[in-house]
Amino acid sequence: MKLAVWLDGVIYKIRLDEKLYEIYKNNSREIPSPPSMELNSDYEILKKYEKDMALLSPFSEEDTARLTKMAEIHPSFMVSNNGRTKPSTEPYKRLFEVTRWDPLDVVSLSSSPLDLLSSRFYDSRIRVLCVDRNRKGYCERYSPTFIVNSLNDMERALKILRVV
Image (cartoon, rainbow, N blue to C red; front, side, top):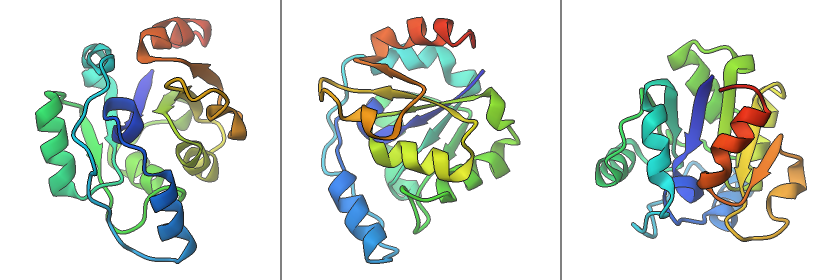
């Protein structure tokens, strides 16, 4: 199993849905800056998956590097925003070009309907685990493969999906 993790919402307490949707709707190539540096308390569970993990980020390469350094997380691959991010196929297209992973082996860990749309736009075979973060019903909009309340529930979901 390979894990593709969104930096915003999963690792950091950052919600950019409205801003990113506005950028998408206006066909802009603006790259947002991180509005917060607050980490989710359960993100450290991801450290044991670093070897088979890629980080997806809606931020610039510099901001992404700074945020991963602050979180002390070291994924095998990082895909930052180069002017087109979610909801778009671009982040996943770049992910699969860089990693050469098979979409059937990938579980995408997200926290937003825009994350789900991006993976579905690229390849519907990618399994999506959505971290609801106590926003009841937020993840349900685009039918993720599995919904968990926090990253502490992630391993149970991965076992149910038979990927670990």
